[in-house]
Image 1: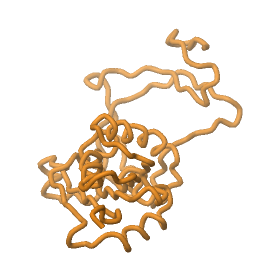
Image 2: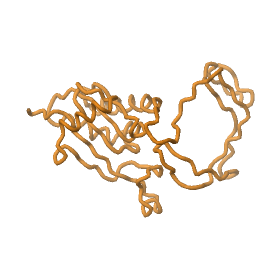
Image 3: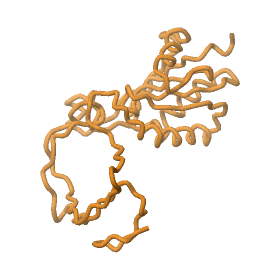
Image 4: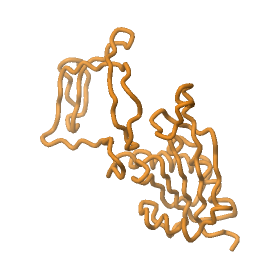
Length: 217
């Protein structure tokens, strides 16, 4: 580690970039910010007062690698987000007793958050539904999740063409899709209506799509 010259705090010497500074309490100082584009590919709102960071020093390696979530129309090539969230989702599933998990991913077309895919080796009737419900309500995929797709273990959850081939050939819309309402949302959601936004109700629905071969067959 090296020691920050202003704060005296240690941080890893091989960090790509470190910003050192101070954050005054929001009651002392806030400044107007925005509007900014967001990871959804849309603006999330207008100007508003936000906390301030007073930067004292900037440390970085030569040609640092900066991973981020650019506010662009997806796909973002945002490899960082699912690398962080997919393991949390896998833990959610295993901690709930869901076995047979072969892969999980959050596809870039959904901003690496709104479109979750779980690949399982089915072991019993209802296995796929269980996995989808746990994912929709868990921490790894619950926040701003819009669609959870459960596929068999012969499908690559990182390949959107593979996934939607399974959706088109192994699901029937009338019986393979469940809608869960009042789920964990955010003001960044472009589909929150003006009426809900006014009362700060950012809840939304999630579709769970069972795109697995029918186990009973």
